[in-house]
Length: 565
Image 1 (tube, rainbow, N blue to C red):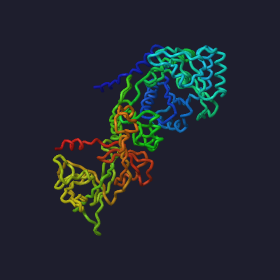
Image 2: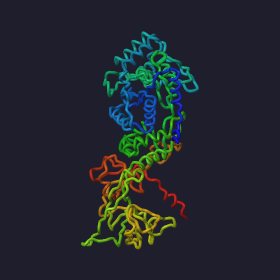
Image 3: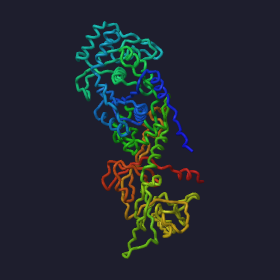
């Protein structure tokens, strides 16, 4: 009997369009590009575009370029260029060619003169405010600029004067001559060049005029022989302009296809707002683990595989929607469940004394080594040795003096199993002067050691622990969502997104950990058993790590407790 055929994944609408164009002979191959502007760090929304563009190139045995649309030197920096390249590589993608829009400044200028000579572009003296006024509205047509009918010869002279630096910043622009009555505002004589004296991160002060994004974008695609220009839906209304430029210049004409951008609850995706968070020191930088940036997610402990799986789960759609952040959190849980080693750590310690634990000749507790499974999902991960003694630390929440009926952890007269250890029976507690339990006293059953249990005893609860003499205190940063509302970018309560910052998005505490956790490497993700997934942060030192919480484990007890009368 043969194995059943693998399930076929239906193609999304972009793949259908590509198949159609290839079959019709419009293009002979697939060439895509990822074209970020280097004016900030990439975020989770960019990851979707990265995986889509690089993934299509891989699927169709084509090429994918990384191109920086660096046409606005006032906001762009080399730091952002370097961070973007690092993020793309970290996500597991490698570009075929690296380009910059600034590589094409000379050609773009020549094409601008070509449009001027053809009577399809003119120099305009209107200010920015006047240009917006003349453009009209969605319901009213625009008005022609008083400079629209300058001759090609005059426009060439003025444009060359702009290039030579003869005029002040903002005093003149070059505009395409299209249709001021067009229902599409992007076709109402868009600006191609503006005068801007700003030092460019690559070209220095060579230029004092810079192309607008719409002018540089499509022509850059054409120069690189891109066949499919994949972009988000906000550029759908720009597509007629993209096509107009390619058609009127009579150059290679890629096909632009738009898809829905990725929005996630409890996150902001605007680079401007993310920059504001950084500049206002609401976060500790672009890579703050609460940020939705790729570098922030990396430092938080997300893996490239989990982000890729999340983007695949979301899929490629034609209409914008907002995805629940739980789907992103579940993606990293699922991946880390397979690969993360397990370790024991206690965040809120309560002392537990095993009163019948064997003693050494000098009266000290005997130390025993017990074996703990590193990852039950991965047998090849093996086991590790964990020291156990008669003095342990357990979580405060794992003991209740007055326990509800379905509480299966430790309580007076009750029994639980210590993870990778023994069954213990609680017989007494010690309280302070205020009546708070500060110590739990138990006995252990020597016949119940994990992996060697011959007692036949069964208990419903298992708790984690650390041996007090061997426990190391480490800093733990428990991160929550940065915002307290689902959609901080569009609230209707009259507040700004900053008003919805979560004051409890970071809680720093101390954890007591087993010895093996002192040897983890920076960037290594682990599971604190029964607590959550954590990653070793760069702020730690050898033997003294700092851990960032990635995500907590699913809290089944919280649901049970909520139902208790």
